[in-house]
Image (cartoon, rainbow, N blue to C red; front, side):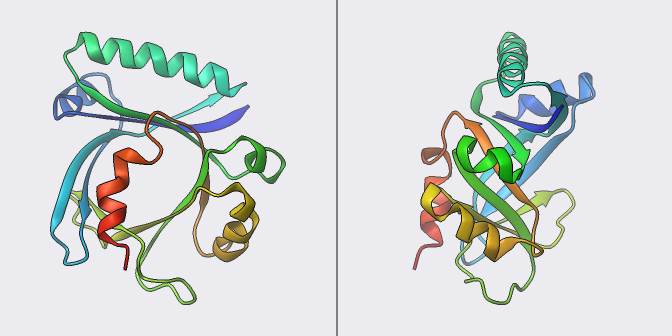
Length: 169
């Protein structure tokens, strides 16, 4: 069985839906370099096992259909798995990891976000879209942060573009 985490990003109605159906929902503020809020997102965190990725996609379609009937405007859908060397190099659209605090040997230009209402320490996001650099990314982050493989993303670049661009020097 394949561990997955399903993220569905939607409008604020997602909070009520998730509470009603006992689904974990995160409220995330994406921050600029001066800690200003660039955007606020409402995102599901559904951890589920599937035999195949296509099973996860069918499940995702059903949940999104139900959310839209509930009146939620779905902005993005994403399926992640833990990094599996035997499959992730071939199947991932991109690799990603999240870390907080100071990280030696890695630049500081990774976008930051924070969970609300926790106001926990900032979380930084590092991504690699270039498959030819996946191995280098894994080597750099192994033991520093958990690496995730994104195997489906309805908006792999455009959804986060403003946030990521704010951090480019």
